[in-house]
Image 1: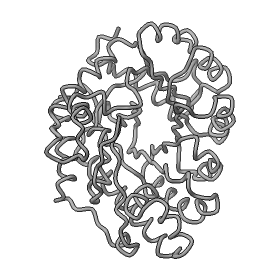
Image 2 (image 1 turned 90 degrees about the horizontal axis):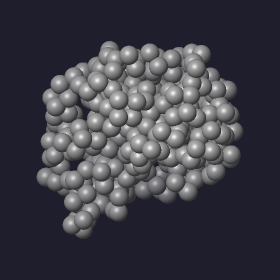
Image 3 (image 1 turned 60 degrees about the vertical axis):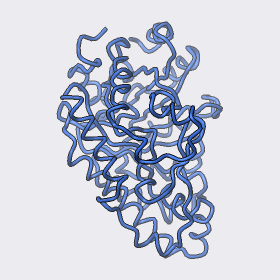
Image 4 (image 1 turned 180 degrees about the horizontal axis):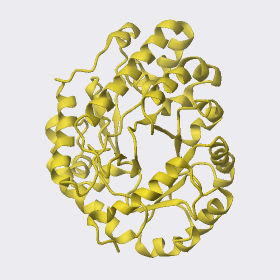
Length: 361
């Protein structure tokens, strides 16, 4: 049990630094969390939206202080788990913030919120801009400010969950149409993707400009990942729809340009994008990849070659998900502990106690 508030002992920085630098270590970086795949059900305000059958999310339904109350209760898990990671907060991961700022309606589904596709003209995507006076933009920044004040330095505050260029193009244009655009109007569609990337970086830079550093570094609250330098969480879920040729021609240069801007960038991936993993790893500036062990995803035996590809390319690797003792032992025995971080979703302290010896803790 940690004596530091929320388990945020500054001594944990050393293991994070070893992770980013892929230094020789006795075991992987390890974090345990009681959080689930469905954050909307972990907070009383968002749970009430689903229970009441509300169809669309509106600004007046979001009170950052109400979320912060629940967040601080959740973060106290860090005082019990005895792991390697910091606990921190961000503007709620329940909300697809960037799509909302760009005008997408927010539809409430069981367990999550979906940004409804806008089906805008392609030419509009080339000229769309992020407006700092937009109510959703202001709510996002207000949320961050509330968390900073509430944290009073006890826990880090990071950016919210933001969609990447391909995902934004899909939300604004329509996911199917955004692929058709690359076939029918490649130059114009490519310019639209670049505009989405500029917006993605702009909102990231804007929030980091008002967030204090924690132990001298930056923080991503979705994966409880601390970094010594500026960080961006890249996300390109829509790449599951791209052919390798399309990714190489249109999106790889954009992702490379984003990665160049942030010394500790990382990319979030699902198994559905593994068919272009070799092309993603060609982005030398991308120092870390996070790959989910998704519910109903491929068995770990099928994912292991991809995990090894990341490590053999000299990149740090975050693996997030739930694991049986046998599954975790299989991964721990099969992967290099250097630059490896297991972010493990558990249901009880008893489960943690069963998994700790497997990881050398």
